[in-house]
Image (tube, rainbow, N blue to C red):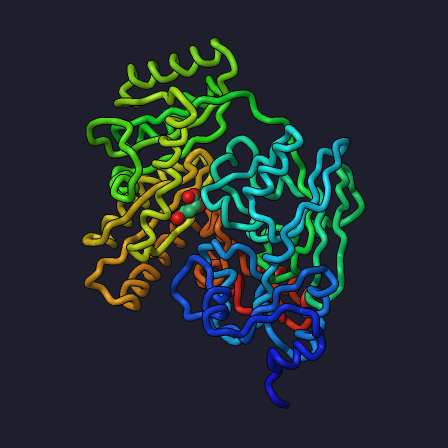
Length: 461
Ligand SMILES: O=C(O)CC[C@@H](O)C(=O)O
Ligand SMILES: [Zn+2]
């Protein structure tokens, strides 16, 4: 049998937009990981659910692998097409389809950017509360595919909590309408939740109904400098007991150095090993006094060395930039990324164990720590020394990740907290999920995608 081509697909679906230029293949064939050379067959840009179904049916008939694609801001290679796959980009399906004031839901197409969802919710004096730095370029379909977390999980949970309904095209081209916006639906397996976080391996999200909520009371943003690692979770406990936290994010002096070199403004004098950006609800004087009291207690107990409370929206944004600018500031150093989690209660011991492991394994390599520490989620970025070849660097990092995975397994943690497994974490899935779980996951994959055409090679070891 001859290999199917983009021209065959164009014959089948004449109105489908298809791209095959080298520049497009490269652009749509990769995400924010830069490890794989993009090599897709073609890029399909459907404009309707029917076109998505048409593409999936054609792919089934011809055994063509399909890589669903959103904003491609992923960090685990979930949207990489490096083996002649057909990329199915949802970027043209990017509209708001409706708002329901009674149900307080917003129905959107999958290619809409997270930031546009935020804006659409605000038009109705409500909020869609999932938020993170890639908001301007990531798409809601990708957020759903990875169950994206971000900076407000501590208050609002992951994407999973905010999906009231999903329309999904399964691997055989069939359209599934899952949960239909219901709050209460105790009628069997919740296939909507199964789709969330499935990284395009079970179905393609073609429409999502999002739950919205009331805007939070006005908040304040504080930057704290801490003298040592042990202070981190103690300050977290202190603040959480007294304040209504919206975010509690940490980073190290090394992260700060990079973000300042990248153009962010210094907010505190002196050198401190650890920093926290925290946002908390402060609608009235009492709440503001509680925040200052918590801060003073931290200082008295020797847990906080310095701090600054933002005095304006612009200053709050500048403090947030110190945290949110980290990923971009590290990108030129070709970072190898770990995105790991343990239970909040296990964080202090875990941090010590990880610190000695990384110091031992990367004695001459710069390692940057930051993340959503209030959720037990740590981002580790290992920066490639210029003198080291790409392949040697990755091999070294993969060796260390194996050790990290063993530690996580002992601690009952996860090798992917919020970025997904994709290609990058595939070899370590067994450290987080049991053999029995993985076998069931493979079984589920076979049910939704009998010919294995949806994002093959992703997730499973
Ligand atoms: O670059 C990373 O490792 C983390 C990216 C993102 O999850 C963040 O929390 O800023
Ligand atoms: Zn993160």
